[in-house]
Length: 123
Image (cartoon, rainbow, N blue to C red; front, top):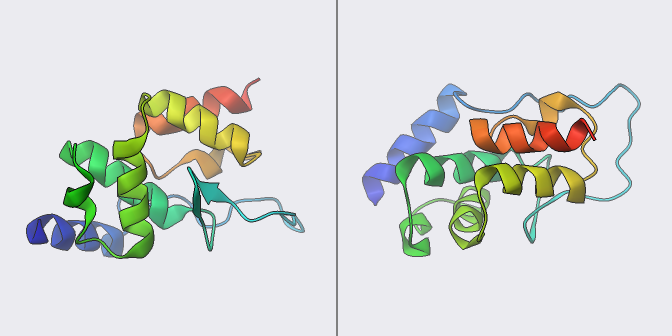
């Protein structure tokens, strides 16, 4: 498990698979903080998405595998395991619940999550 945490932290530090920084239009003010499947996001859920993507890539099936990750990463990892849906459905649901308006906001939780998020934007 420690090896997974070190690899994840290296991934985050290198910026690989990280979503774009706040990509909302200039002057855009969010009236309510974002959440990531029940977990409060202090930002635009970037670290939650990285934890989600890591759990998907690593094939985690038990939330105990997420225990070594720090806060937001652990919550994203846990959300991936606890959701009883596909990554596409999760991306769609996240975009809907958080009123996502920019395609760049869909990045960071893996290709299938992003595809579901983008599908919601096209509606």
